[in-house]
Length: 462
Image (cartoon, rainbow, N blue to C red; front, side, top):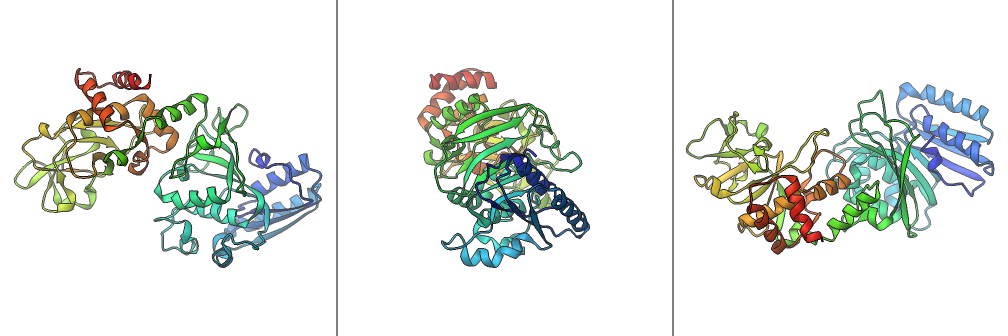
């Protein structure tokens, strides 16, 4: 019912509605009942439901037939037992957003399947223009729905929030924001309580999109105070340019004025890492795929392999007394020059206090090694030209990314527990000169705590 009430008052007498993954018809029912309750100016509803699950088709038919009998607004429905994506693919690829194409629907409401599919799958091939790598069905449904909407039409989807950032969804975001405008976003407190009986581990959101190129001043962002209800909502009117930002067109899911202030502070810092000659990369070694190269102790042609558990209290501590902390240097692609880095964990648990957990690594601490290796569950910052970062620069990067400000910023940017190097490389940071100054201040003492980093960083924000 909450999703159904996101739609605006329809101006048309005959309303065309699509539910592209109808299931038992619960969303369609909610929308029709909402139209009956509030919008008697609608004289006829034409509903199309796609569903391929043979076990639910009879239930869907019975529910829609009951809805038709009881509806106060004349209702005609059609169930299409076909794959929604593939059934539209010929039209999609021949008339993609060209003028003169008559789209079918005024309202689209959907809870699409959340499922990664191979890039060779028929659905991915049918919509290759919005795919990068192995796509997820949910955003293909959303992209096809945008295509199916009439100009000025609206769609309301409940989907994971993973599409809001990252390279895998870049083409989709570009398409969505070129032909549509986000007007409403609803966020849930808990990732595992939206669908009580399902194993949905991604954080979900409800989003309303209008098919238009007209500017939108604000986006209404609401969030639930309880896990699976809408009784206690927080609401924020956020400027469109605050939520939709940057060349990458990331969607920044702010929920409070304080979070908007965090965005403004970080955006005022400067430019992303690559523009100052630095880049975050993912660790080189996938350990379980290179078992034969792993070693339990040092030796000739053996180098340290750094894992996330080596990051302790702000520094990289090695060895940690565990198995397979070393690796043979015989495969060039698995080793890197031993030089100064800032290491960062790629994965944290949702219960942990911080998303960004980093450790200072200086080559001088391990002078006996010309090469080292990094396991792919950590990220590391290096120079783009192969030069060596000064210790002060590494410490300065630590001040920034160990601060409360940047941790909060990343949580707004990314709702998952994975720290993505692509996203990290998009975050504005101070200049190298300022980073060196920050680092020297941190090096003057022994305190590497977040509180100390906050104090140092606050000095340049005043």
